[in-house]
Length: 434
Image (cartoon, rainbow, N blue to C red; front, side, top):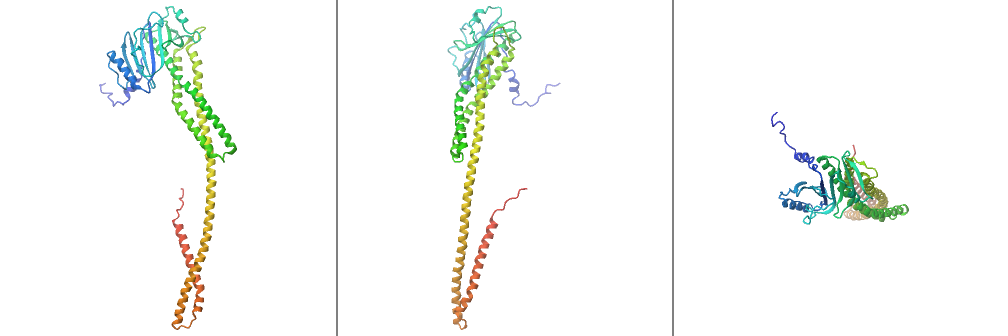
């Protein structure tokens, strides 16, 4: 087969589509190891995040990444610093050999005083992976017993211990006891734990918003109830005022819904990721201990239900407001139609009166025109009598009266008929529908 057998035109997105599946490879982690990851909300200021990453890279003698990159790796001290950009946050991951004491401060790390946070700090994790041969009884005693979680994971190849509490640096500590995992398996387990802690924090961002919106929605519901009660009693008399109030409530509700739409949607997505990562752990409960999944389900599920409840209340109230608005508008339209009917009836009455008046005027016009025409006939009769024709002017004038009146009346009628015919011809004919 020649080398050019598959030289096809390449789609613009092919490289990105193929590369995305390899964009987040698991880190190969030896024993013992300590891992740090901090996450910052950077959606509002990606420029600061890019500037910090460039400074860190140049300080380590590494070229700064391109502005459109979403992953970057560099060597830092005895470990590796990895940066990753997500939709609304960025993470900085650093691993290094663990010290003898659990939770001991690492003197040299990339998150010192020179590290300028690129955004609001949202999540921090510290994971220590140690062989199960070490005595960790004293370490476990330092965890909060009220939220202590212990479980076997990765086909019983490791034990995970945490209390989901934050230390003085704002980091959630995990202790992983290795029962014989490979370096790749440690990397997969560490990544899942990092995702669980990071995404469960992000998922909970919707709860404060839901708690803030709930009283406002309650006020709108109460106002809407008062409006509907008013509609039952005297809606037609106050339809305009009620419609104005409902429109105000609908605008307020839609503003709150627009504010919460993204946050609630993101919380659902993050919560689903947490559930997926917990399922991947394949936990087995240790006697007398709670698993990570059970603890998170007990804490996260009510918060997510609260967000869902607020979102459903918004949608349901929006539908009710729309129905009430449509009802009030229909009543207002009916009143407008009645008003228009009354106006048309009044216009028809006036037109009828104008017609009667016009007919009266036409009668008077016939009499007036006939009078002047008969006067002209009288002058003509006198002229005839003067030239020697023996006909009395009075006789000729009197004989001409009925003829003149009839002629004038017929002429006026013909003129009116002609105007009516012209109006009918100019009126648009209705189009037939085939």
